[in-house]
Length: 351
Image: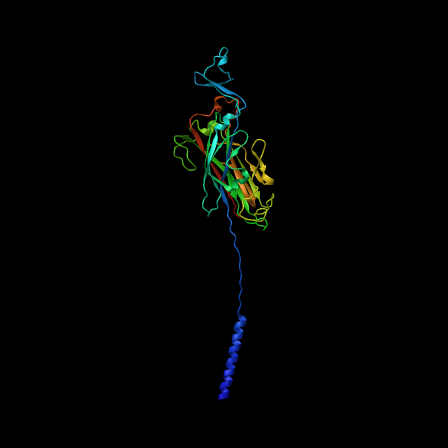
């Protein structure tokens, strides 16, 4: 009987060893890791500037008894009364040292750019006087990407409607190597602008505050945009992957999270943008009159953008004419307009 039990025990042990060996051979493990990178776009007002074009002539008009105003030649001082008995004559004279431009200035709040998850940095209030020929800016164009502005206000006080002023909207594209990896990142760009005139009754305040203002409609006479003959022009410049010095989403040293870019305007002899830096994408609209209604200034598209900048330039035109008579003179009544810029940069739907 012992032999039988021993034989059975040995058989069971053999089976257990076989089962155990089979289980060990069947074990299978696999470990795999992967990474995710996250970088989204941002857009904000980043710069503003202004200049004032002085008249290169004398402009005079005479107030007639019937209420009309007749353009006339400049009569000179009282030393000419023996030969000239004209009265109620008003003139704006050719600027001496361009002094008339210094009555215009801008004020704005300025902060360093911060990402969405970061608290805003301290604010500095900037006040800048206008000068002729060259635009005086909140910051230089090549560092605008690192700046955010708010509560922008242009205060115009020179004798004639001859100021130019602009605001820049900056765009940071996601930091991904679209071009290098064969992924087309296409962007539609829309630059749209409108205006609403107002009559000032109290202090003019910041971005979204209309207290102290009486908003006007397009039927109201003697509106600022109408009297000044304000016209608008838009410009777009984009630094693209694969073009210029900075070929990738990184900077030239292969580092991410920097604002090094070539999205800056090349300025022509007339002080206006003529192209983009280092062959960057550039597009300009024609010059259009503000009507109060929103106008699409630029509608275009680019691929694989790194950074973009959209400029909205407003020009007072009535004070630029030597034959304008009374229309060149800036009204004393405090009035103005709320200029609305609307910038869209998005990826079109896949077909």
